[in-house]
Length: 280
Image (cartoon, rainbow, N blue to C red; front, top):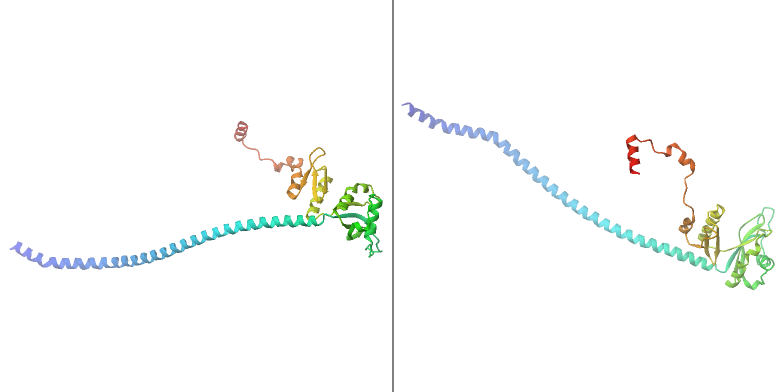
């Protein structure tokens, strides 16, 4: 009787228990499943965003690489253009100097001035120059040997600088070769070549070095500049500022620098000093 009753109770309660258990599981699991699906959707969305960003980054990297390549190529082009410009500057300067090959500069030429120190024009510069060349350089010359002469700049204490262009290079060379005859001239007249502005600046720098006894001598010939570091050294041709810099003596620190305490290292521990002595 009891086993039969137990079987009936079991048959009756089992479906109910299973149904309740399933309902309970559904109540607990469904929200989790829903959250999982939502998270999967979010993850998928993030994946799409990441993929788009990856593509964008790849495109940017490629664009950057292309820009770098372009910049490098443009840099090479700029270097080539800079070299061409530098070469053109040299050629233009050389041509400018060549155009001056028949002219000379006469310095400290006496000229008539007014009470304010200004030059009284017109000034017959041709006759003044002819007189200097004939009587001070002892060269036979006439007006036909001079193409043009004129004053440049302002007069200083009644003296001015004059440019003279000769008809021929030979006459210019003859006059310049005898410029030493003017040494000790009472008016301080002297002659230089008519150099371009660039070469004039180079010569000014050499003159300063000569004053400081950094070089023995410097001179010009046919527009070229030469210098000697000492009387016994060979002459050097000066073409640019690098050549001038090479003539300068190496920089020497003044003794006061070495004696100043701030210019000495701080004392090291004995161990460090020992290591240094061992290394030496």
